[in-house]
Structure formats: structure tokens, C-alpha cells
View (cartoon, rainbow, N blue to C red):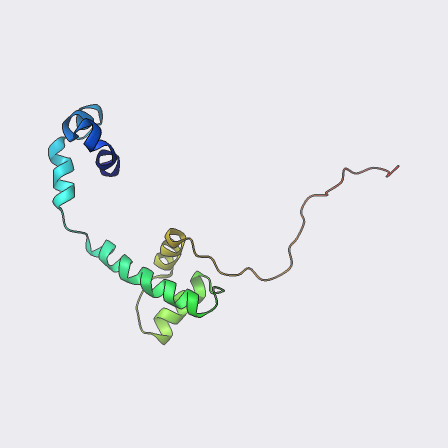
Length: 113
């Protein structure tokens, strides 16, 4: 909600927007003055590491291999679910190997006439 208020506060002001939304203006100002959490700070550092590992391996590593490299090779302790979450935020995916399977027929069944 704070992003919405930031987007429209120049046009309408903070207090009128907060009157329409279910938040108090003091809550908005408290959120804006609060320092970032430890998780968000760590996430930013991990995003840099994830992006570096992914790019250095030709964009083929998925979450499992990025997680293994960070934990084993580089001694950066991090959970795999954290890697998965951050890779989704960064819009990074590994390569999918194997055959592509078609699960539905492309033509309707019957006699080709």
C-alpha cells in the first residue's frame, strides 16, 4: 500500500489517500522511516551472488545447482527454498533438459479423408 501512496501522493496528498485506504497516515510515515529488515538486506546480497553464479554458468543452472554451488563451493549458507524464492523474483530459470512431450493430439482423431 505504501507504494500506491508514494505513486499518488503528489496529486492527492498522503492523508486523503489514507482516509480511503484502511491505513492511518502515521502508519505510512512509520513504514517510510523504518530501516530495512535483516532479511531484505541479506536477500539483496544473495541476489547478487545468485545472479553471478547463474550468469557465470551460462544461464543453465537452476535453483538446485545454484544452491549447491553457494553452499558447498563458496561456503555461503543458504536454504534452497530461499534460492528458489529469490530466483523467481529475479526471473531466473535454469535450462530444462530432456525431450519435449506432446500430451494432446494436434489433429482430431478420425480418418484423414
